[in-house]
Length: 84
Image (cartoon, rainbow, N blue to C red; front, top):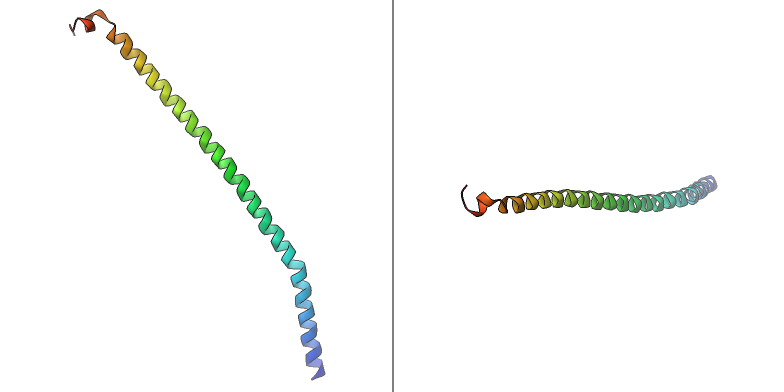
């Protein structure tokens, strides 16, 4: 009977020792993963914003080009006289 108590006590102590070693490691891993996720989200957001600005700039150039073309056509004499 005494051996069983001794083994049970030894198991509990070994389990406690393993938990003391593993729990901080897992906590550090989880904290590191959260921080890395935050960094990646910030980078993705910045990248998406940069792409959106680039697309908006290209579209604005196209609109400005068409506006200039239409303005030039509207100033042509044939168009003003409605001969076309």
